Length: 557
Image 1: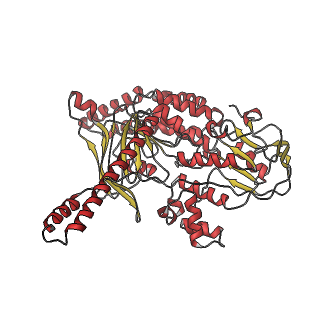
Image 2: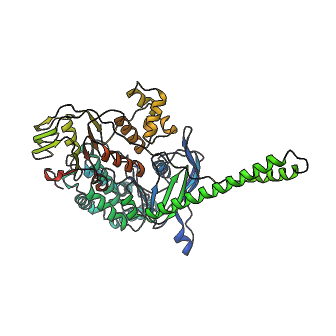
Image 3: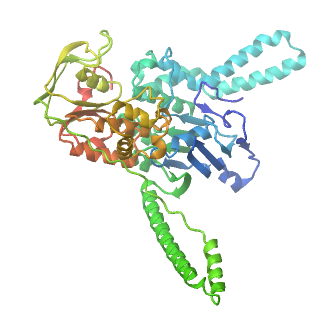
């Protein structure tokens, strides 16, 4: 029986995709011994894909072998999530052949996966067992139809029903509720089992997706930015889980320390290609730098040789006696194949404009109680004072009200009780955790709408400083990667004066270069900063004060 349904994020490949020339096939596993052991779980051949005139992949090859822990790395917008969507059948590529082993179940956690309203946490987690529920339904249907069967049909149906019963028994079908409770407790979701998933935080929804994967026990994990929105405790939990994971996985992450601790193979997405490196992330960085230097040296040598040939041809071609030599050199020049050097990606340059000095008082919270429902407050009374020049990092588990605190301080939502006193002369730049409705406009027009006094050259220059290239600038906002959209939002904040920055998980989706540059810019900023972050290596070198929000939460953590 096919052990997965569309309601489960664990499926047997090949995944369903629209019919076209692209082939997604099952591999023939009728091989012996060592060959079978080494056979690829997934093979991608001659893959090409693009969006409009923006090429993402060109003649790409990829393989996933048994037991490999693969880190998929590259700058924002290079196509990491696109590749994941292609191999899972969620996106139809332009060209290529994708071959999955038919013997493996695949679990895919998408950074943008949606959990529909009207579904409880328990129901969402229980979807991991949908294939067993379907098996039970099929078995019951067989028994219900037996009164109308012939003897031969009866024999066949009884065998089928017995197979289904074996599937249920061997999969601990009758312990589903207990398993869901166990995973929920382990991930800190025990108090949320009866809550509608639409009312949960981004981090809590991410935990549900991880919980489903754990319950499904897939043979292969495909993880796209799984640490986004996760708190430190559960990032550690996920790290330990992946370190001890016996099967293969493919991981997309910009958290270098996290990735380095769990992978043994790196695939680097760069300049429309995907290159394979053996070892951890730090080893990849070393080898990649060596590769860049070698290619640059070879390119210089080739250019020098080409220059000599061109000079010789120019001097000898006019002379009848030496024209033959010139033609020979021209043939040699024409046959030369020049190596392609690795082009440095445009790196962002963040610089937040400082406005007039604010008053000494920034925010004072007096007996502030957070929440959306008076019967279920998120916090005990909070008393807190933030003054000019402080850089405050708010930490703690997901779902305890960190983002709600920022919104309450900003006046975007009303607290259940208590008050917030704001100081004078405040110019606030606010980076929200999520942009749920990215614009349908081009990046150029979207930015220009907000800064209409600029000319086009100035707009393009401002976007370039955010690390967005020409292709991204001319693309629609909604087709940008998560990291590219974050850079656009940061670019808008940069171009406004501010004396207070409020940043809610600003590093989510950002690549390594952008994260490092944002850290530098926030360290250099002379105004006040209030920040929610789950990355200690990011906020510890910025913050003057670190507040653990678990000290006032009413939630079990």
